[in-house]
Amino acid sequence: MLDPELKTEFQKINSQFQNVHGELTYMHVRFDTIEESIESLARSTAEGFREVDARFQQVDARFLEIDERFQKIDENFKVIDTRFDRLDSKLQNQIDVIMERKADRAEIAPMKAQLRNLQTH
Image (cartoon, rainbow, N blue to C red; front, side, top):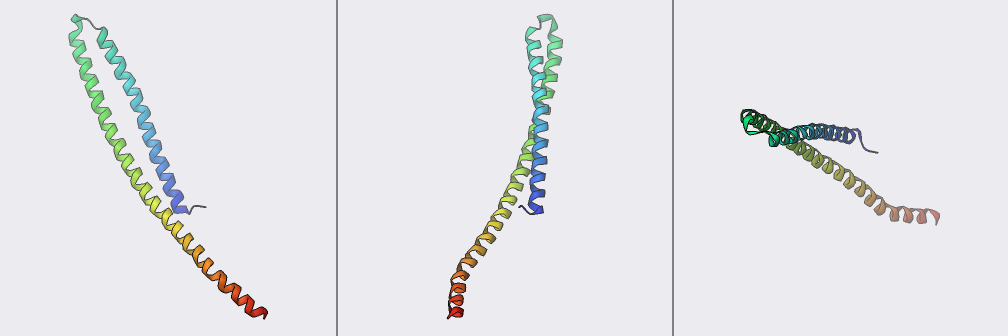
C-alpha cells in the first residue's frame, strides 16, 4: 500500500491532468469556432471585405488566446513531469529500502539455521 504522501502526490498529478483535459476540451471548441469562421470567410463576397477583415482579426485574437492556453498547458506538463520525477525518486527509495531488508534477511537466515543446529545438539 502506498504511503499517504505518495497517494497525495498521485492525487495532485490527477488534478493537474484534469486541468489539462479541461483546457484541451475548451481549445477544441475554440478550434471549431475558428474553423467555422474560416469557412464563413471563404463564402464571403467582394462587397464584404470589411467584414472579412474584422473576422480575420477575431480569428487572430482567438489564435493568440489559444497560444496562451498552449503555453499554460506546457507549464502544467512541466509541473506534472517534475512531480513524476519526485514520485519516481520516492518510489525508488522505497524499493531500495525493501531490497536492503530482503538482503539483510537473506544474510541472517543461514546464521539462524546454524544457531538452531547448535541448540539441538
